[in-house]
Image 1 (cartoon, rainbow, N blue to C red):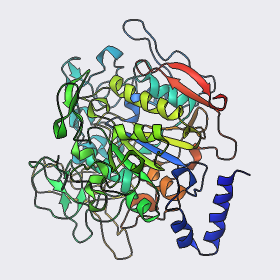
Image 2 (image 1 turned 90 degrees about the vertical axis):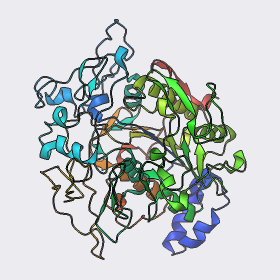
Image 3 (image 1 turned 120 degrees about the vertical axis):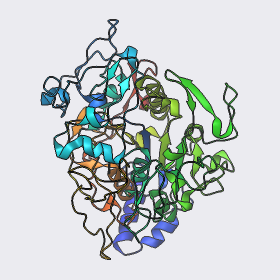
Image 4 (image 1 turned 120 degrees about the horizontal axis):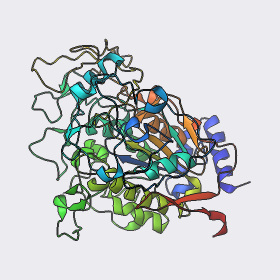
Length: 534
């Protein structure tokens, strides 16, 4: 039997005898591959991109049309590709209730405008589940296309890599943002399952809208307090409670947050450096680091205020002055050096994160493919699970409304503020219930929010599989908790009620030996590779 499996059996036996603390303390000096896990997965990599609804990227999956210039990049639909809940399968391509029909966006128009995706406006667009107010509530008018594009979508001849990963590995067509709203709530939910800053009042933090609330749910794009790159003109927030990093620290398990632009000591080829480092893509030049995307900077326990560098490359993932916060470049250093942390959260430099307005799906594809190619060609691939998802929908149309697992009835007296509920009418996303035995009501967490893509790339992912079970950001938190035996975050975290992602994997059979190597420019398949022959 594999020695790693023997170690896993030993830990199970210790837990059965009530010796969990002894087992936990024994792993503190181990390598990431040696941490006892509930599955064969030893490395979890979460690639957290920006602002895409499921229908915006997968609305006609797996059927793609040739580009305007006649080129095709996604040129093969596997015979056994399962049916997803798409615009095409629902009939909403030609009979849409939003006053117009969705239109395919050609690869030549990859750069689009940025829709409104505020907490209130997104709820209003859903219109109680009628899903018919997207043009009226959140649509932007694209200067290049000369029309409102909020209903429109890309297909596999633009988002080619994502479609190839979905066909070769697995994806979900029932994965949701934990709440409505923009980037910051999404960033908080994917590491903690919660946006509630304190449990003493029901006030709503207004994000980037001026307000005096000191506790409540974060619904807007507030910057993290203490981050040297945070904008002093934007409201800033420090979160209470715990995130997944705190649980990993308590268990002595390596982890890292890898953010594009985080290393303030680097100078880009265009001469930019520090908080102002920038890069150019198809949409123009934009700053690499965006503070309100920086998940772990919101908690004092995981804050690296000055962006201090790790004491050595060997310490990436371990506890030192960097406090587990790194530049995305450090991920590739750790991967090459053989010290990839057990858990890694990755955020691309902004020009490659896919966000409408300053990024695009083609630059995003370059980042995704280069990152996944590197992982697949490493020794860690055979025990790795990569989750690719998006922090919010950008307001892009999606025809599916998920269950409302957290109700909220916040009303703000100031007209136009994006901090009140509107799903069922002004101030109405249902009546909130207490979230814990103390009777605390954590208002301002209306959700699930919009449906988002979730792609799972792993040798253990089911082949060409679509998972239909209801999951959300906190399901990723729960997978990490369960895989590394961490327990739950508490304080109202959605991890306690999250749908499980284990159904996407096949842990009973030996993992697939092949990798899928793609071209970063086109997303097309370059080769499959038998890793055992190296």
